[in-house]
Length: 505
Image (cartoon, rainbow, N blue to C red; front, side, top):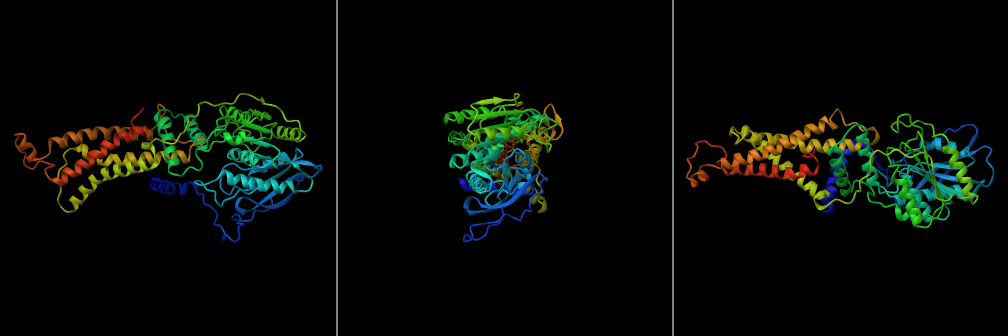
């Protein structure tokens, strides 16, 4: 069964590769153990009031990694340090977090930013535990820097890093504190499904496309092995975190459910007996706690006002032994729709079954016009039993492949920048057209079955005492098989289309 689901993964991977462009860097031989990233990154340009130092360290599996430590030129000895852990993306350069690094360094912290790994990490493959090992390697490097108090070094995790940073903290007492930005207390598949659905709803989409088809597609992709760590539960890891935690969310977070996640994080921390946490919501801020002028769609370079000040003062307090207790501040976050639990699919929604059904339907539908073409080339044209059969044989593949490609396009280009195309009554025109064709296919299946029953040939009518119609269609065994296969495909198409929301409003 797993090999079949891998076939679906390969198909989807080929479709996605041109869109995603995510590819791991080729590694060296096992003897070297240390594998460098793609190209050396030049030292990032920094303001004159800061000093930088290039550092190297080893991440999980001995991977050689590079980073930069930023500190204020007037930094005092014995200062705290913080390691910044990236969000999702393969091989993300350290410069992606320069805005945060500069702001935190000006707060008196030494800040380590590093190039994210490419080896072992791609659009379809990653390990949060492995990324946590990379973060711990960075923590060890920062703890050894002159002027940094090794007992005051913590981790900051953004988005995907919000799953990674708690793993690192739960594994090592060398981590003094944890800062989470746009973090999740729910599994990745549930968060991502919500993000794309919320983006579609924000674009004006409603109905079966967003309520049924989009989550069904994500379940199938996850079951096919294309969604890394889809059901990872961060709750037990958060419950194992003993360090003080600062949670930060933008009020207009469109990628992480900002209303549901903070209570989940708090509940997990308290379950483990950790009440040393503080949560803050920043107005006018997006997923990364950057300023946004349009409700989270556009991310400006500037951090939300007060964000860096909060991180600096909170780190100074907790490293001085003054950790806050269960404190929440800031305006209420905006979340227009709830998340939907995303459990593994039932057997009929699994990747192997969906692949098998897809193959059978396409074979049944395409066989009808293909045989007609072969007959025409051989000069053996035969009239159709009914025009409905021709409609089913031509429209069926369009619906199946069209809905598949359209859904995959929405998933690859969804979330806050969803572009479903023109809408009518909350339904994209493309989806409405596919639904109309799906209904036509159901009707054509019924009409073809009735016509086939009426035209089974002279022998069948003779047994009923009927007169044979000379030249009547469908008299041959081959034609019976051809039509029977088409009707079987149409019959199988009905529950398939209902499952994917094509027959629902």
